[in-house]
Amino acid sequence: PEYQCNNNNVCLITTDGTSLNIEETKKIIQNADYTIFVVGTTSGEGNDRESLSFAQSVTQCQLEPAESQDDLIAILSEYSKKSIVAMVCPGACLTPWKDKVDSILHGFLPGQGYGAALSDIIFGKYNPTGKLPITMPNIENEVNFTPEMYPGVNKTCIYSEGMYVDYRWYTNQIPPVQPSFSFGHGLSYTSFEYSNLVVVVVDDVDVAPTVTDTDTKTEVETETETATDNDTLVTLQVD
Image (cartoon, rainbow, N blue to C red; front, side, top):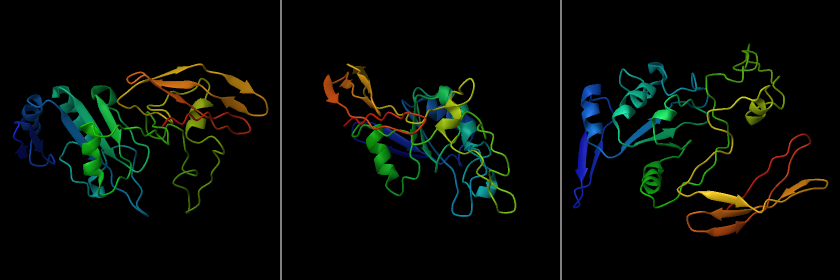
């Protein structure tokens, strides 16, 4: 591991995990105020992920110890005062350790500037305000894709799911299935309160509530966008 300390005796310890065993890592984490787990998957054009897990096989050429990335988070977060998981993944992924950590940041495919952006968010220079553009499932293939649907048979995929993709599949089950994280989920360093909600139904649905930042007491007037033939999607744009 590498140790860096500033003049205020604030120290940062970094390691890729390959040079430590679990017991050594536990001791470092127990003495730290915060632990940041940076995990990722490997894929590319013509080389899809083998699963939605961070515990992918060594054939993916990932640099990780004998324990998978999921195992490391699950085991070591038990010894951390505060745990942050920063994920790099091209889409939906499984987070079986989500109830053991304090924060999860999904970076999707952030590029070479991720380190600086991650630092700005963690240290509060910028407020994380993104919302999930996808649904995060609880288990592998929760939506019950058949081999004919994905990855296909004889290089042919049959999209028999129709309109029931992503959140539509979850909301149209009887009873509805609660995903790990819903489409549109996203937290920030503040909280919001909705008030004065008015719904007007004519040809379309129009919703215009007042949104209040409960930390700064700033009120924001909102507008909405509507929707589809069978379902109404309400989008609140808060600036």
